[in-house]
Amino acid sequence: MREVALAMIRHKTSFLMHLRDFKPWIVNPGEWGFFAGGLSQGETPSTAMVRELWEELEFVPRLLTPFNTFQFTSESLRVHVYHCSLHVPVEQLNLHEGQELGIFEAESILTGKLVSQKWQRMFPITLVSMKIFSEFYHHKSVYEK
Image (cartoon, rainbow, N blue to C red; front, side):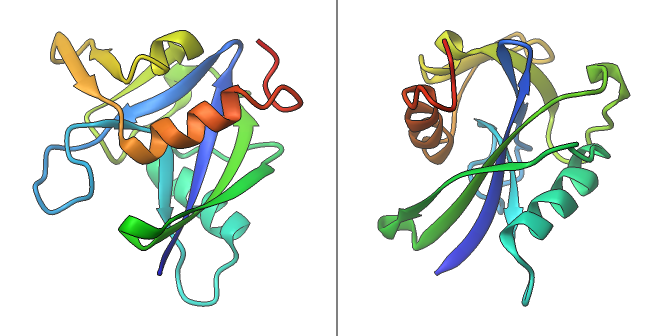
């Protein structure tokens, strides 16, 4: 079972996502997703999440809060989910993986497709990101609409 850590980064009432690269050998190429990465051997999920956010964005959250762990049996995947706030201007982030960053309202994310400003067209959201966000969005103690 592959283990991954995933972060939903909140910016005011919206969420930061990235359009994944179009490389055919990566998981979900050309789809929007939250920032995530695999755990290295002996690494805790929270340590992996902090490392991934630094590698992908040069961002270190002030507070990384665990939300839930999801198991996707069909994909042999366990996802440790965290959430945090973006405490720096988006312009200070340096995207190292993916085509572009986007900040989207919850209602837009729940449609399953988001527009790319760079490519001027819609791209789907990864199925894993959709399932996790839907659960997060409907969990009132974590997300107040």
